[in-house]
Image (cartoon, rainbow, N blue to C red; front, side, top):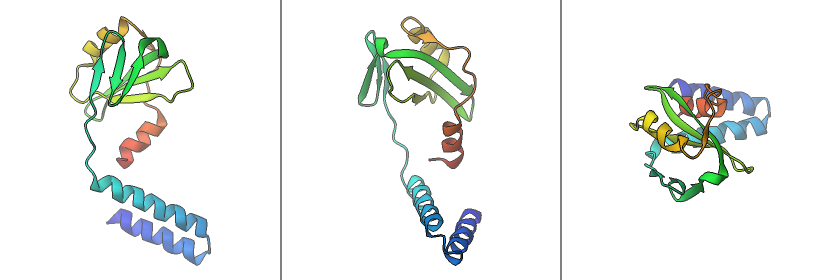
Length: 132
């Protein structure tokens, strides 16, 4: 209810100040939040093979992965991050109930683990807080 009131207040302010771009951004943000609350997140299969890593329909070979790291802060976050040699975007895999030590053992045979990465990226913090 607080979010609805805040959104309505911001939308009213945007319309009264004739700031239509801000009003459009408020409406789009509200739609994203609404749609994200309607649909349940789908489970994506994550597999580690001798050739690479499968995440859903995508498959990444070990030679394409530069490094990996974990962000582990249960119960809030249990994530594996993969960074690639190419300009491909970083991939985050939610480990759910998987033991990160087993994943570390398997991946450590093929890919370098970056132990210097200890923080969760800001974009993931915002997505987790907003549940989008």
